[in-house]
Image 1 (tube, rainbow, N blue to C red):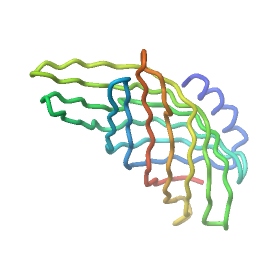
Image 2 (cartoon, one colour):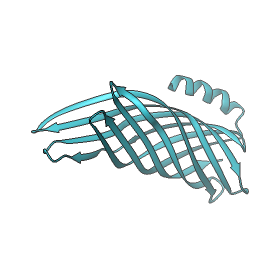
Image 3 (cartoon, one colour):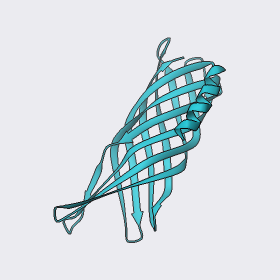
Amino acid sequence: MLLIAGMLWGASSAAAEGVSTAIAYGSYAINYSVPTMNQSNVVPGGYLSLVGEMNPYFGLETRLGLTNEGTTTYPNGSSMALRMSGFSSLLARISLPVDEDFKVFGVVGMTNGQFTRTNTTNAVQVIDTAQGNSVSYGVGLNYRLGEIVQVGAEWTSYWSNVALGAGIKSSISGACVVLRFGD
């Protein structure tokens, strides 16, 4: 996926109207389900991104991110910790400039990620990891504070019911504050 992102990025940046980098931090909802139970945790997380805009309405964005771990303890004394230990996204970015400083946008694309689950029972830990891919989509807004600084907010669904094994599914979404530097 990163190779494809790099090739598309190279093709898009040659004709780019503006290139920017961003850092985002926020809350991520991690949902995990197996046939016998469901678990949801809200954890901090974030990403770094690179955006190339071909024109004021369309661009490409790559993201690299991760989340912290969220743990739930069950009545029998066992616990399960969930986290997205790393993800990369390639997204098309469709923007609607409201004025020269404010724009609303949507993103759609693909996310590849590594999901980690840690089960602890009677002081014995079992750590499972799984890779998954999903269509991703989201919405947000950006406000230009100065010549090269923008601040924004967004919500993105990175995974939606991704199969991680027989009967095992996960969904991950995030709401972030974003600080962007560049055109």
